Length: 77
Image (cartoon, rainbow, N blue to C red; front, side, top):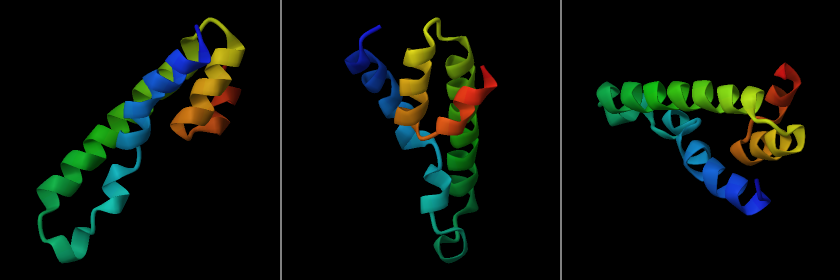
């Protein structure tokens, strides 16, 4: 898999992971948006960690882990 493809694959994960932390929970008053963003973030982390563990090439997995923002998850392989 080319590095360009890996970076393109990581882009939606990067946007979803931690998105709930950018929503001001207390002053916004809409906890439904915060909970939906947290649920999406948790799902993205789960799928990203699965992909990191199951990519065929360790170099590709390390590149994907760094691109997603989860470089420590490469040690789960």
